[in-house]
Length: 250
Image (cartoon, rainbow, N blue to C red; front, side, top):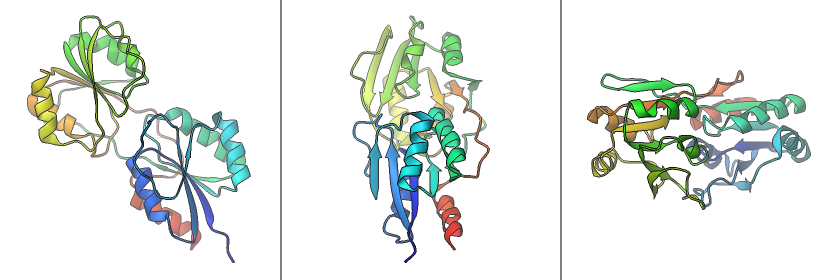
């Protein structure tokens, strides 16, 4: 009997969940999705789920070797560059195939007022030029980079609210999970009188309505560009990843 191909999905994204669902139950594969544990109540995922870090590239290398992983699918957030770099190193040392699911970036359209910056620090440094009531939508780990923006009020939307208060002068925290609705984003902008957005160029459809709403309202968006893409096989969706994987076992 042929042993199933053991697939490790580095996940947390919608693409990771969709791929796990498609692979689960197919006897040709054994799928496990690894979550970093940053979200307290992640969405349900089909198949085996592992939570917590690996301990860097060396820990991931050991796990791949010990578990007999035949393929690593990096379906992490486009800005999760730490685990992605670890995957590069670990897969190279284990001679394990690696596939990346990287959703396409958002592109500017007529009416957009984007200010493209390289990183969060640059976004914070330039923010006062563009707004005073800011929708800050970059995740929770880098919020404190805006601590010196003392004259700005922030609306911060997160899946999980932080256990400690951000080091910001004036803000409101709200908890919600995408996908988000365009009409609701419009209402939120009006209710909180938002005049600027800070966003990472995450791509995809789940959070894009905020970009649409900003375009309609003429609100500037400080857009943080992605890290450099890895030089490995890349697909843009779970369905394309499934086709690539099935081609490996034919």
